[in-house]
Length: 371
Image (cartoon, rainbow, N blue to C red; front, side):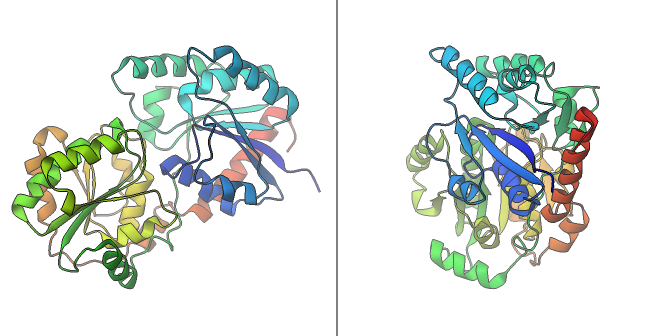
């Protein structure tokens, strides 16, 4: 038997987010006799999924977040990693740092170097501008381009050729379950007749939680019995909590931390709201549809997210009041699962893992002449 193909997944960290869940779905179902994953995390403390990753026999290598004070240490760490360990494929899921680790991988003669686009924009900040410049440089070191959607691919690769790798989910796991809905709402203290809108995602500027709070304030005027659920972690969580307190709505807003059972929250919700400034193809949007949730998303989000009739795209400049009015109109709509529809649309992770297995094998054959 041939040795398994050695694949290094490069990520910012492995906390529970869309990209991380996409990778974990693949890790759980991939043929581990033929493919072996290791991880490079740009995070010195333990991440949410680390224990599960290590239970599959995967190694986790760590480097600190790159800054002006540790540039030499960072580059030396990359050099040591690639000189001490042999990888057949480096799969770059952290595009903004790819210029460094794909450059090191090329110098180490790693045959397959993948750069994977998961976004459709960079924030218009000095840091965002720097990320865009570094990404353009990174393309010189990659020999494979992947994207989670056509829009994400065109954003970073322009007219250059790229392939689509769908952000797939476990459709059975996210199917609607009324018993789970009632159980979760009781745990959260949400009355069965309350209208619960929610969001699952990392707390950062991109996800636009402040705008979500403003939507909820308007929704309360229409339906005083409504509540808001926000699930996730991130750098803006504390400031959003403070904002909720300032508005005096803390009794009606529920904050939940990262969980291994996000399907509980989708089942508990009555509507899923995502006013993001930009997204590649949000895994949460696919999960929400699978659970039969009416979804309200910023029109900046790719239409490829829509695999059912459940999504309404709304411009942010319509204002929070307009969003609230549209959301309120789904109050009395019946609910059932859309798992079969999502599966037929090609977003079940079992099917997509087989596609990625073939892709990894084909890429290695193409670039080395052997699997």
